[in-house]
Amino acid sequence: MSQMEEFGEELADFVRRIAELKSARSVPAGDLSTVLDAALFELDHVADQLWPTYQRLAVNGRWDDTASDRDEQRLLRSLFQRLPLPVALVDRETVVRRMNFAATGLTGVRAGYATGRPLTGFLMHADRVAFRSQTAAVARGEGDRSLNVHLQQSPGTPVRATLTALRPGAEPRMAVLVVLQPAADRVRRGPSAPGPAPDLGEATRHAAQLDLMDAMASALLTTQAGDRAAVLERAAAVLHGRFADWVIADEGAARLRRTTVLGTPDGPVADVLAQDPAASPLVVEAARGGAASLQVRPEDPDAFGRDASGAHVLIRAEVTSLLCVPLTAHPQGPVEGVLTLFRSGARLAFSMAEARLVDVMSRHMALAMRGGAADR
Image (cartoon, rainbow, N blue to C red; front, side, top):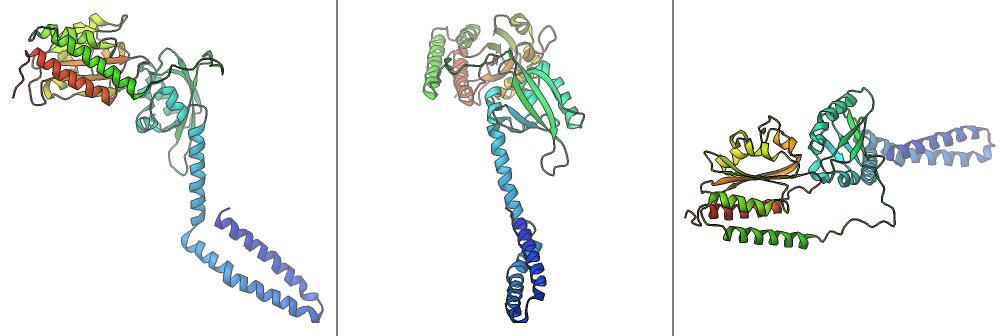
């Protein structure tokens, strides 16, 4: 109970007791001293208890209510996080303000990473415009909406997104609560059904990275030093499939030339191979500035340019994360080429550790392309 509520109850009890004292005026004269003592006691209670409490509340405001509100807010946040349904709170631009545990499990995105980023960035490109439009309509007060979307984490499984408006606290603008529910025909896992394959953790990932480094070293050591095209081709073969769904290698820096493209079986490999690397902003930036780029769920579909058919490469390849790394023997050395890796579908996004691994391998590739002699 808040301090204000307690004060109200005390005051109400005092008023009732005063009414009883007034009715006691008709008692015999011999009993009036007892009534007088009770009246003096009540006056002392007002002077010592009720009046100081009133002054404190008048000066400080409802300070105890504020503490109570904080407790209630903590309780509501805890309930929000523990809801069994995937729920996210977004603004009218679909920027995530909060995402509960169930939503992070469904989308495969950590809540800390999602906060401050548009929820549309976790959807397939074809669904983003419709979701953004419906969210804006709900935020304008045009009623609740519902639509099917597809997450980049699992593009083959439709998800029902239900949108409803709410106003958090005393904020002037409406927010939108998004409830994400897997399709009704999705089979639920029974209690006795086998669970997902166990994750062996960091040790397994580290062992896989060591195996990849060993395979790359073997490929580069068995390739003729200085044969630039062969180095790119052998390195791409090592990375394709086991590490990335797409491997795109461009030779040169000032004059880029695409030499190798390995993609998914049904992907537009020929169109990407025919693309002019100079039309890809990420490749040009890496070649000129020597800066690597790691993007998870890239927001800009033009980041890798368009293929020979005029379509966005990132959309056609269904890219969920990418790495674009310059091939240079050392940070201040010349760029020998650019290596770009794509992951698509439900595959986990590239991590910072994997980006570091590719950076090391890119330096080895650059040394092999130059014949093993690095600038000193």
